Length: 114
Image (cartoon, rainbow, N blue to C red; front, side, top):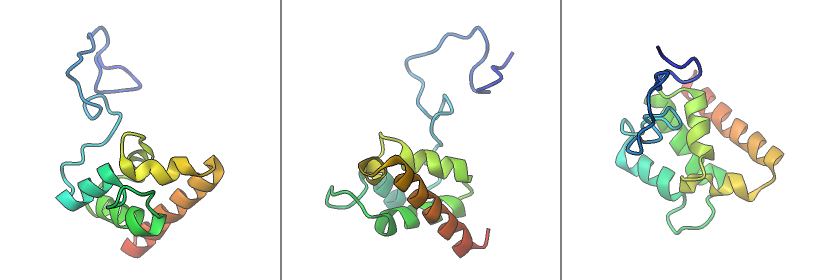
């Protein structure tokens, strides 16, 4: 029987330390993305600085949507503290960060016509 909140976990199944965040449904599998997009997600800006939303997030968002990721998966990746691209999100106030991220995702959807 599958857990109602997470279909990746079976009821009564022991959790394994070898499972990845992707296995647990906590983060989307990014293997469909080009290497440079995965690098931008991991590292954020090229120089390790706090990336601006326009410089790194919009291209990542566009690439993810073009690869078939859902908006909630894009949101998860862009706000995951394990990803360098999320530094800007956590460097601003919560409401400002959410508004900017919504704006970037909306802009990407409009650009792609979805």
